[in-house]
Image (cartoon, rainbow, N blue to C red; front, side, top):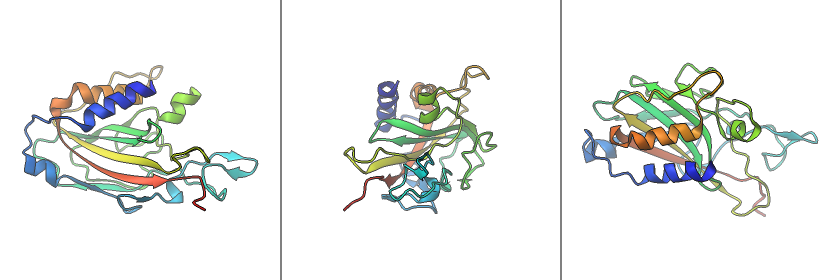
Length: 209
């Protein structure tokens, strides 16, 4: 599954977008966060919290992580946008930490911790922890790269897609949507993607010294 998600996201990254949005509109679409700057380290509030022997293995010093999705905001969505989709992809490990789709076109911001289970900001897919553990974790799952396994610094790419329709993923309580189904749908609907905007957060559990 991991390889298929990577392949789907690679296709999306190099799409030749033949759609209603002009090149100027695509260039103006912009994503930012108050939690971290593009290319900077993500804060502890966004980090996964996995306790082992009384300490969080997802942080360098064992501090508890908040496991809260960061605040995100975007502007200058192209005309004709009907919904947004969001994918948070650890391009170092090739796994998806958060997926949300059918975000209303009127939305320009996701507040901190919008990725909780049952979020009203959009529909969510099973994150990488749910996929690995067999639990339907339809929420945000923060970074937790393994310590001492190079490359030590992982790159978490947050991408928002402006789409001229809704995605309507097939799902039910017994078969919730997955990261693969979301990325595959985005590839299938690539001609409906008007623009995308990304920022990258960094994180490592390995001390730099």
